[in-house]
Length: 249
Image (cartoon, rainbow, N blue to C red; front, side, top):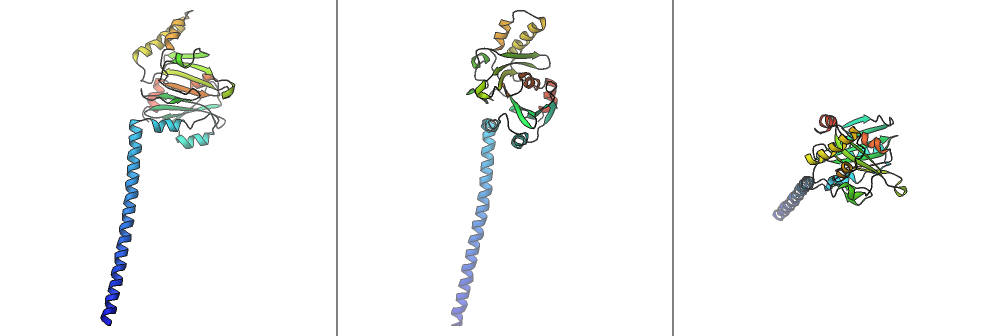
C-alpha cells in the first residue's frame, strides 16, 4: 500500500516536472520567435529602404501645408539645420538631410507654410502633390504648358525653377518645380542653366531660346507653399551650405 502511494507521488511529481519543462520550452520558443520575427521585420525594412524608395515616399506623403510645427517635427524629428528668411522674417526654414533627398520646411506662426523636396539620386521619383505626376518623369514643359514666373541662378547654386498658381480649388497655393544641382545634374544640364543666367546677366532682350532649353530639364525639385514663391526659393541652400551643413547627415 505504502509503495503504491510512493509511486503515485513520484508519478505526480514527474508529470508536474514534465509540464513545467514543456511550459518553459514554450516560453523559450515564444521568446525566440519574437526575436526572430523582429529580426525578419528589421531585415525586410532594410531591404525595402535599400532597394526601393517606398518608405521615403510614404513619409513625405504625410506632409500638408497647414499642419502644426509640433506635428511635422514629430514625424521627421529634430531638424539638422535652421535659418531665418530675409524675405519674410517671420519665416524659419528647417532642413533635414537624407542620402536620398533633402527636405525643407517653411514654418511661420508655428505652422507649416510650405515644404520642398530635392531628390539627390537619379531614381528618386517622389510624387508631386496635386499633379498625379512624379519627379524626373519628364521635362518641365510637359508638366505645365506655360510659365507664371521663374527663378534661376548659376553662382552659389545652379538651379532653374518655375512657380505655378494652383488656383482657388487648392487654396491658391503655389507649386514650384525645378532642377537643382547638388551634384546630381549632368554637365549638359548645368550648362543650360549657366547659359540662361549668362543671358540674364548681360540683359539680353530675347532669352526665349535659353528659357525653352531650361524647360527641357527634368525636375528633381518641388515645393508647395502658401507663401510667396520667392520665399521658398530663398530656402535653397548654396553649395557651400549644403556641403558643410547637410551632406554629412
